[in-house]
Amino acid sequence: MSRPNVVMIMADQLAPHFTSTYGHPVVSTPHLDALAERGARFDAAYCHSPLCAPSRFSLMAGRSVSAIGAWDNAAEFPASVPTLAHYLQAVGHRTILSGKMHFVGPDQMHGFEERLTTDVYPADFAWTPDWDRPGERIDKWYHNMDPLSEAGRAVTTHQIDYDEEVGYTSRRKLLDLARDDDDRPFFLVASFIHPHDPYVARPEWWDHYDHDSIDLPETIDPSELDPHSLRIRSGIEADTVGFTEEQARRARHGYYANISYIDSWLGKLVATLEETGLDESTVVIFTGDHGDMLGDRGLWYKMSFHERSARVPLVMAGPGVANRAVPNVVSLLDLVPTLLDLATDGGDWRDLTVDLDGRSLWTLATGGADDVSETTGEYMAEMTSHPMFMIRRDKLKYIHCDTDPPLLYDVEADPLERSNLADDPAHAEVVAEFAAEVDRRWDSDAIRERVMESQRARRAIHHANQHVRGTRSWDHLPANDVANHYVRNHHDVVDAALRSRLRIRGNDA
Image (cartoon, rainbow, N blue to C red; front, side, top):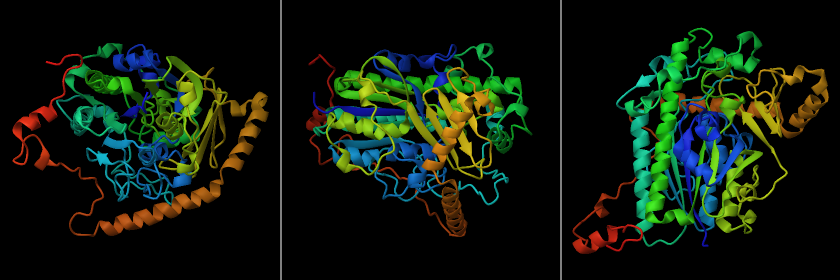
């Protein structure tokens, strides 16, 4: 078989726990179920950093947050950092992005040859945290409890508008790829914003669920929470504004509805591959950037290394992919080497890359064995004033922050992470080993200085730009070559009709 195409479909803020594919009893994701039923489902996949931009930058680079300075949602993603798109270009793939990637800075392509939409979020430094004043809320862009009170039905929202555009342009591009004469394999990313809050859904998706059947969060008394969870509760105003049981149910209802909405787009894109014949040469990957606590532990949104926030769905299907559930702990950091193995049929691509922090999952995806079951995480954004680090190895998860006591969880025996084993004398040796490993892996003081230096510089630039008259924007402006669309005077009418026609498979009529 020739080198396969890759279509990667991304959801935003989707915890795998809230899909039928991963066992949720209420949420319906039939198209993701179908993908998993013929492919590989990874049951312990993590983002590297539980926040949009840092997660996406580290995914694209295959490198850690601290290696590339991807500190927060306003950290610049430098043009000098090679990405998955660059690497796949180098081995002969076309690279196309439709939708969100939250690139911050003047480079809005990062190795993609084509970008079909603008981003949903700003590309400047406005959303920079301030570790010099860590207890101060920044009301303009910090999360709060408003999405819970706003949860419900709507004809449309800016997020629905955006995802309709992402879905349309992605499907249209697949049709174009099927009928053009460029024989290079392609890498297409279709990156949606749902089910990210606010939890507002179209009526047909809201009505897909019986409101009274929506399950409620698993709460914990705030006195039992770790310091970072308490900081998040304060930062999002859950400890002051709070939320009612009905607000939680409505928010989860909207979230579930929007998961089914994104699942429907997955179904449409897979169907497009099938009707064009591209399915036989295309590996489909479904994943997300991070999860959503969705009220569990009294927390909402992301920003922590607890399971609902840090876990992501990861399902692969297509040529060469085995039908299996993979128990190994893996990471979005692993996608760069995985896709390079896929794109080169296991060839030697390592001279093309800088040092990568992930490992290839292609052996696992194709039915082989791998003894490694571990990953790491880093978080350096809002709701903390010092770097946070996570190590997940086998069934244990260790979390460190200089300002907080250590956390150790057995996530298999205690999936809601209610029992901190770091306080258990029986685990003292394991805790000491993890603590020593953190010291070896990371220089927390030096990283903190780098974070704060970056924050100060970005805040200064943003403050200066506030006084500039006119628009100064790094936002991507998609090209639209209307001079060559449909039929124009330099086209032969019959030839244009023939060139644009994509015949039904198995039918010459």
